[in-house]
Image (spheres, rainbow, N blue to C red):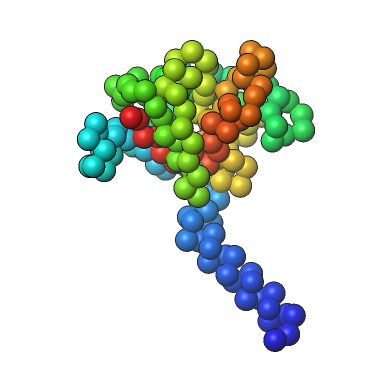
Length: 173
C-alpha cells in the first residue's frame, strides 16, 4: 500500500471517529438556541436511568447571573478570563440538589465533583474565554472552571481533574 493511500485511510478513519463522537458537528460556534447542557437526576435505586430534568440552550444559560474571573490554569500558558453562570445557580434554576455531580463531556469523559465544591467555591460553567465564545475546538461549548487563583487549595490536580471541558451533561446523585 502506498504512503498516500495509507494516509488517506488514516485520515478517513480519524474523521469517522470524530464524527461518531459528535465532535465535528459540535465544532461550530453554538448559536444561542443550540441545546448545550442536559441536567439529569439519578434515582436512589440506581437501577433506573437518570431522569432528564432540564435542557439548557446557550441563551438560557446567559440569562442567569454571570461571573467573570481571570486565573492561571494548567492548560494555557498565560492567565485567561472565563465567563459563565455559577454551577450552583444552574442547578438551583432546575431545583436540583444532591451529593455528587457527574460531569460528562462530548467525548464521554466523566468526572465526579462533590456537590459541596459548587456550594463552597465559585465554580462556573464557562461559555466564554477571553471574551470569545467557546466551541468544541477550544474546550467548549461549556467548561467547568474553578477560580484556581482565589485559593491555594484549588491549585491541585484533584480540582484540575474535575474541570471538565466540552461539557454536555451533569447528572446529580
